[in-house]
Image: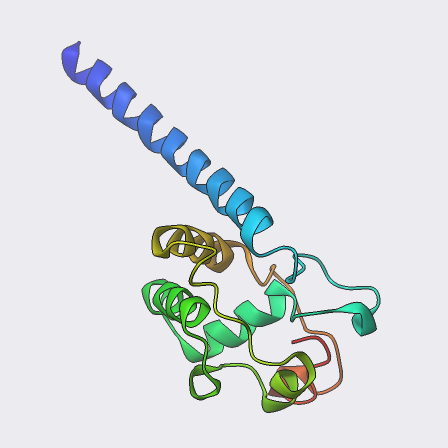
Length: 143
């Protein structure tokens, strides 16, 4: 009986931890990132101030093949953005500019939670991009 109670408690704890992580990741993204990065497909790309998260994550996942690598990249890049580190296409940096450092706005732990949530949720299944040539990584309209 004690073993069953322990396993039930452990299972419940893991389920709640996963739920809290998802809520924390989404809440942190909303608080720290959403002012610039949209989570939905934009209806008017001329109003964007930064690439939407779906496009950011598409490019991150193209370069970094594991979640661990992608999360580490995002956390590092947000704190110390440099053109040499960027995974987006050069015309996106020209359009949006280089992301400003978030060093004094978000902690490394928060960034890891945000990045992990982003990795798990974006791009959404079936996302094909915004413009012509997106499958080949050319002429991306919004990222």
